[in-house]
Length: 91
Image (cartoon, rainbow, N blue to C red):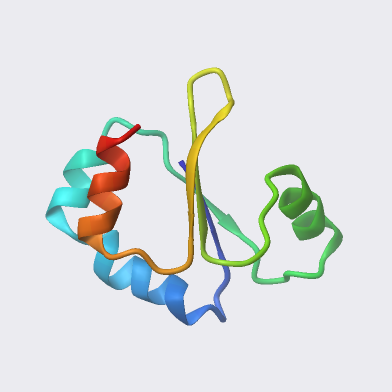
């Protein structure tokens, strides 16, 4: 799971404080490798490369990759814990 965020992103803060601290989400995602990708400097060359590679149009974006590296699913914008759990269950 790649979580693209930025320090200035209010929905990202909501994800961090509400969704990702939910006990059910923590349990459901425990078997996943979870990487938090900082796009705070959104226009930097490094951020631009990552945005292009993973087709990120804004933050927050969460990209779920399979063991083969192919994209399984993604979400854009704030997702509450209930919807996030449903998304994980569908993978």
